[in-house]
Each structure stands twice: as C-alpha cells, then as structure tokens.
Image (cartoon, rainbow, N blue to C red):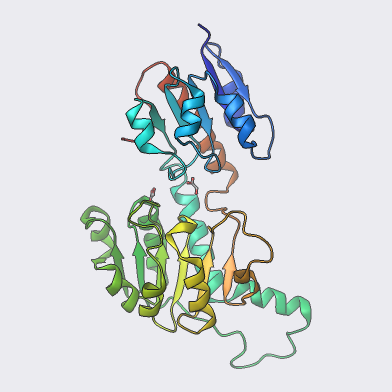
Length: 324
Ligand code: GLV
Ligand code: GLV
C-alpha cells in the first residue's frame, strides 16, 4: 500500500525542497499560505500515515479518528504542542515530532526585543514622532523602566527562558528569580537564579517573563491574583502561549494601575481581533506571534519537521521526538 503523508500548509523553502525529494511516499499538501479549513483538513488526513502540521492545526480525537489506523506519526513545525491531544496520540501509539532547540535563539532575541520595546515604550514613541507629539525635548516625557539593577522573574526556565536570561545578564540585571514545576539547577546555576513560588516571583520581580509551555498546570496561571501581587511599576512579558494568561485580568491590571505595562507575542485568540480592548492601550505592546520568525530559524524548523516526519514513517529515531 502506498504510504501517504499530508502537509497542512506550504512550508518554508528549505522544507519544501526536502519534501520534493521524498520518493518513498506520496506527499499531499494544502498548497497555500492560508490556514487549511477544518473540513479540508479532515479530507486531507484521511488514510494518511504521516501528518506534518503547524501550531494552528488542532490535532484532536476527532481528527485522529478521521485519519484512521494507518497514522504513525504527527510532526509539528513548532516547539509548542498544546494543539496536539497528547493522550489520544499516546493511546494510539502515534509518534510525535516537534522543533525545539532550532528556535531557541530567535525566540529569545524576540523576547528581549519585546521586553525592551515595552519597558522603553518604543511603539508609543515612534507613534509620537509620526503624529506630531514630539514638540520639544522634555525631562520626563516618554520615560520608561530600565533593566539595570532590576529583578527579572522567569516563569519556565527551560531552553528559551534560559536563553532569554543569558541575554539579559549584560544589561546589569541584579537578580534572577524563576518558577516552574521543579528547580532546574542545571539552567539556574550560571545565572545564580533563585527558585521561588509563583506568588513570590510576582511580588519581587520588576520584569516577569513567561516562557513556559502551556499545560493544564500553566493554563491561566497569570490571573487576577497573580497581577494583584505584581509591583505597580512592573512589566509583564509573554512569548509562550496566550492561554497562560487570563486576558481580562491582564486588561484590568493594565487599566487599573496594578502593573505598568505588558508585551505579548501570543494572545487568545490568534489573530487578536483589531477591535480588541488590549489594542487600545498605550501600555500594551502586542506582536503577531513572531517569536521564531527569522528566515534561518523558520527554514530550520521546516527541515527538522520534515526529517522528524520521514524518520517516524520508517520507524527510526527522530531528530526531535516528543516523549509521550
Ligand atoms: C511557536 O510558538 C512554536 O511553538 O514553535
Ligand atoms: C520550551 O519549549 C523551551 O524550550 O523553553
């Protein structure tokens, strides 16, 4: 029987090149830069042995039922895997590939860029130049918050969290705090980072940076209670997943002065509607989920996703397999 794989979107050129060289299976693809409609996704995966998907494709029980018993591997071109029903995949013995490591540096860079843009109010300042708000040099105009001598709290000191913290060290950060499921001495030691409770991290940090993965434990971890504990002068940055945050609570925190500002690369939903209340706030910088968006990184993610898929299909070790 012919081996069939289904690819849910056009992927970056290096990945497309690899796909075009595959000869032991038939590759079907949603050949578009637009997300595949759900009904087309169901049609596409029916009878497939492998699926290469993106973080915008929900791979749930229903879809796995449609795919059927031949499905051996799901390879996602993302480090996040909250769009995959891992229990269902495990139950069916389907192997899962994902793309850690190759996007760590790009995502850490973007996180630092978002932090600096938010605490030094860059989007607002650029807007002032354009709209005539820049009338003179003024002592207190456009002041923001600096990193020097600050305390930075990282929620989820994994690969990306660590890469962010390392990049912040040269700015003269005084202290790093972190929280997560368990202490990570192998990551924390060279930062002299202190493992603390989520509450303590909220209370003591000048900058809170969320880089954890979205799981049932981290779902809306940053809620009313959390923002109430944060300093009034603190800044909140999220480059993980929107659902780690209760967005209404964040909106309230930003408008009631509980915190100073927020920078978000991820939201609920995505894309965020242009009339969303958060977008009307000067102290909230929202980016369209571009953490890993450098040319090299997106190509590397695509190549890794294709290689995970191909290895999974022939039953060999994948370069990056998610342990289920
Ligand atoms: C991006 O958010 C990813 O999970 O790769
Ligand atoms: C998350 O997946 C990380 O690499 O920190």
